[in-house]
Length: 493
Ligand code: TYD
Ligand code: MG
Image (cartoon, rainbow, N blue to C red; front, top):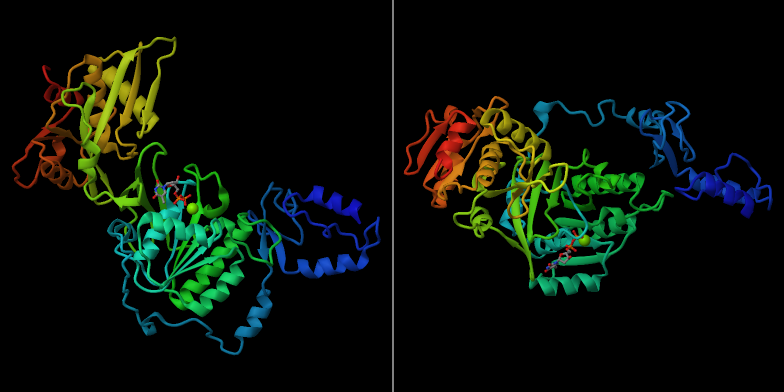
């Protein structure tokens, strides 16, 4: 038996398949019966090419139809289309209802007990919604889930495939949360067993930590593979929709999305949240990448401490707390994350190059955008940076993506290069164009109000944004070009 099976294993490293070799008899041990049994078991699943839909009873590296490589994913074999047709013949309109006859159900959201989390979800938990919570391993996903599970009202089922129930208990003691008897912990990885428990318990909220550890017995592939993750998510989705249970699926996703697993279910779930942060900083940002029940732009800011995650209610103040007064190369920008203005410190350091190639390093800011800004400064301001290293850092380990921080970055670079500090009580907002012009940005009022709230006295804004602004006790200065902004912001210019 061993010979053929070993060969088969080599042919299909993903499943270690023994019986899918297209022969009815094992040439070494004549295991005919075993082959038949194997075939019966196999009928549960099939392999489908994700590029063209070609189906195969066994895993294949190359699709014989579209010639694509590594495109086969295991799926559970379900009833064929013709059998579905037969089933639906009894009621020809099966399932289809005119939209006028559908009664809309008012959404009653539940609070997670964590206001920052509620905000990211669009105002709380929607019953029956499926939420994927992704993030790097160790970022704090389980901690956030447990904190929510202890605070939410109603029965919560916490399914853990990574830790034992005792470990969860230990963690909850460490967090100092006192969950009531309505928090149930289940250490299980077989999703069908979980499903049976859900049926009995009927929880208001279900947490599956993590989706990569769960498996469905009908599939041969290992937990965490595309087929398994999809099947587990599909089953939980069905549960959520029929029982009205809100489901949180935790998935380890690297920033680059290198681990394919949870990424493949992003399109079927209702909400995709990403928990991110720099390993060496305590700040964590919970971002919504997709939300069928709210805005995708909201963020929640947390700080990881001794007793778990603490909400950062005034992030601008926190991020600016360690600013050095009078230092060159530092400016404050007003960035907008969703509807939320954030004041952040942009730091730049310009030093003579010690090696042949000048370095350009950006942390928390797009490196390509930095290159562009340097080119604009060279051409429009006459700043010759060819012999200088340039480092840009957004303090606090936060990543900003919107172009409204351009102006702050550019002024910080000039400030460091000329060793002249920027005005302390000034905030800069504006996108820098290739011509050196300062382009208008959205939601300028919100940014100005945040600056005012934190006691800043001046805001530099694109001149195009100065029209129709509300009168306020903060000085608003419109600038047209980068040179203009530098003249107004740098001391001694
Ligand atoms: P965890 O929630 O287990 O991460 P994930 O589920 O995303 O893998 O968080 C793990 C990290 O958080 C771990 O390195 C320790 C740290 N941590 C604290 O600093 N304080 C705490 O109170 C807890 C519970 C964890
Ligand atoms: Mg975890």
